[in-house]
Length: 292
Image 1 (spheres, one colour):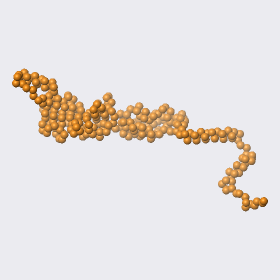
Image 2 (image 1 turned 180 degrees about the horizontal axis):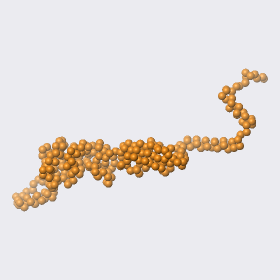
Image 3 (image 1 turned 90 degrees about the vertical axis):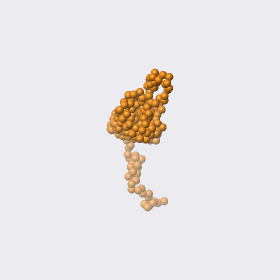
Image 4 (image 1 turned 45 degrees about the vertical axis):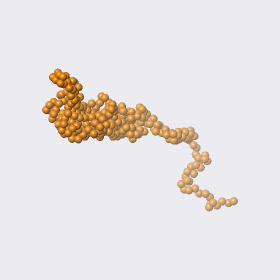
């Protein structure tokens, strides 16, 4: 059988050069390097290790380990804006182990963890190479201490709970008591600021049936305010105290719930003293009276 030039298979142009090089290697024209087999084996093993690391999900850990030991381990955290959030809490949320690399570290995940801390309103986390993490936060602002039953909470101005009260902190905050007190406190305390002589003597603001307020004074007196027009009642209370030194007397309750009336209830000690005096004066004509 005779072959003609038209019957020959011609490689495409882009494969001709690789084919010539392959022919030279297989025909013995080119001698391979001395350690070519060793290098090929190492390349094959290395490729297999890298492939297994990637498929097994271990590459981030490898990157962390290698880069941490080459000068990129996080050894400094700069925190700005924290007053109530402790640095220890921030360190715990960041989750460093001493060999955490800045290169493989996720600032976004750290930001999410720090944002879960109770005092944090907003937070930004930035990586500053080679080994610093910068944390900038804006904290929630405490407005009052809210007592509900036996539990005490620090709340914001809008009534949102921040955190349980730590006994050694926030002694300067006003205390509001009762269901609904945390939601209505801002409006009422704003009114009380117009009566500083009362506000300075008040220990707690008590929400009653989520409708009205009582004042618990520092001397133990309770002032019962009306549901409506309580600002006028506060003004009248100031006038009476200024004229008669009301809060210097043995009065346990000042009831102002009825419009235009102020009913006083004496303390137990004052009532006992008054009863003894009336008994001495009236003798057999004495009869116990309503203690108001």
